[in-house]
Amino acid sequence: MKSKAMVSLSGGQDSGTCLFWAVSKFDEVEAVSFDYGQRHRVELDCAARLAEHARVRHTVLELGSAFRQMGGSSLTDESIDSRVDAAGTGNDYAARHGLPSSFVPGRNVILLGYSAALAVTRGAQALVTGVCSTDDAGYPDCRISFVRAYEIALREALDEPEFRVEAPLLDLTKAATWLIAAELDCVEEIVEHTHTCYHGDRSERFPWGYGCGRCPACVTRAAGWDEFVAGKAEQSR
Image (cartoon, rainbow, N blue to C red; front, side, top):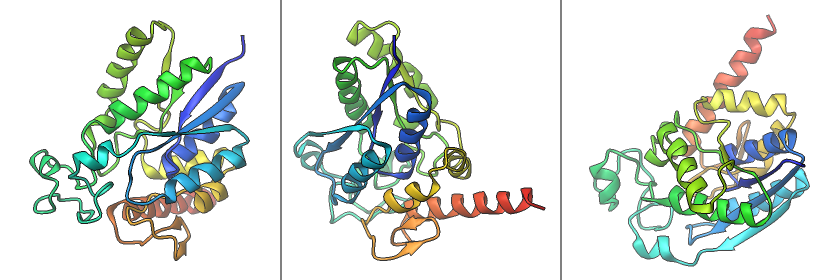
């Protein structure tokens, strides 16, 4: 039996790296992205280009405006500033829990659930996600405990006792994620065709990719790149 995986592909650095990782590990790979009312469509455009480069079937599921209607997150509400400290931004939930203003309560519960549902209908035995517990954002639905608990819940809900949730970046730093991309020979694809900037800014290309260079996502991505490059320089000595 051929192995098959469904990659939850946002178009960002982590999920993009996971796409190429999955292609290297599984016989067949598909990707799924979500239009959920995010404040910009840049990541969706990037996801389409990534899937084309990886030569995988790509599905975009329309989830409507539910997240936007719930409001309160800088990912879906342009009136909310993207800040590490959500206090005073309007994202009261994130402020109460010490999370960035970009946090959307339950987003990964919902998106990974849809991803898993599509995966089993397409005959995939695994769902690959780019969640990362070491990100500065500290989202609770990116923690190791969440991923393992959700895997068990999906197996029960889908009646698929062997179904797996693969999260290859779960406990890695951003520098280590860049290193994986280097090992997979896809650094150029990640730099050029992924996007993590909260403002959807692609007006300037930095060594690590496009972005405003100032928002929390850009700062984290740039710091990881610098650490990755420094590590390569150290190894070459």
